[in-house]
Image (cartoon, rainbow, N blue to C red; front, side, top):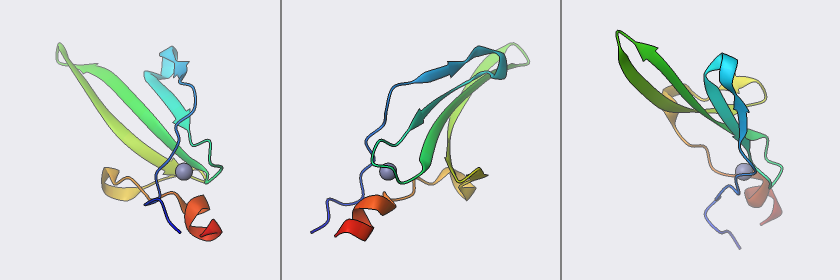
Length: 72
Ligand SMILES: [Zn+2]
């Protein structure tokens, strides 16, 4: 049985100096959702990245939660 590979994001951890905050998946799949925000040319820009095992997932795509897939 699969639940569609949804992540369960943990508590937000702020890194103000790095202009980002992170949430790690509590299912133990190793995916980290990173909210990044910077000021560029007087404008605030922010975006989301997904990381797994220290590598950014290309294209900002949200990966499925592998832990659930393996347990299915
Ligand atoms: Zn997950």
